[in-house]
Image 1 (cartoon, rainbow over the protein chains, first blue to last red):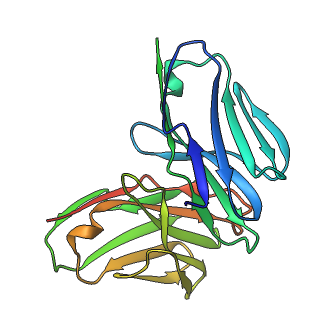
Image 2: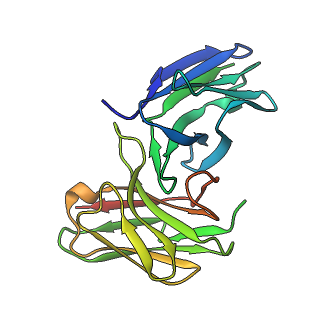
Length: 109
Length: 113
């Protein structure tokens, strides 16, 4: 079993829908990261959080440390949100990230 | 965008040949990382560096070596490339360890025939 599990692996939505991507992890962490990989391959960091909730535009990330679970929400989805979303955790030793396999999101117009 | 470049961006080589990938940063970040990305796997850490001449192995380090002689450059070498090393390689930088954001380079697509 991977230390970081994401669900679903693939997600197709219609423009305007509310989207949720889930991430569960099995180890103690110091922080959790959400990243976005564009269709062209580039990877950008969206959020880093260790508790609670963060919001940036239409994106919201939440984490529940007790349940070892995080969610990434996209409100009013748009075709330009189509990408792979990757969850990663940094362990308590802090120096490395462990990545989930990613969730491929396709938003149709 | 963080100033991080990778070269080459694409390379095709033959089994048994040596290959060196270069990661260059202009951010003066202390930490640099090499990852590989393959279908069915998440990004996997090959090696990382926490300062000039200070490096450590990641989870998939066999067959790879690294060097960091200057803050801005982190080199990944495949001494004798194999087909299993066909992958997309990403470099990342961070000013501190895992609790800080990592910034990724554009990636290098390597094909070993």
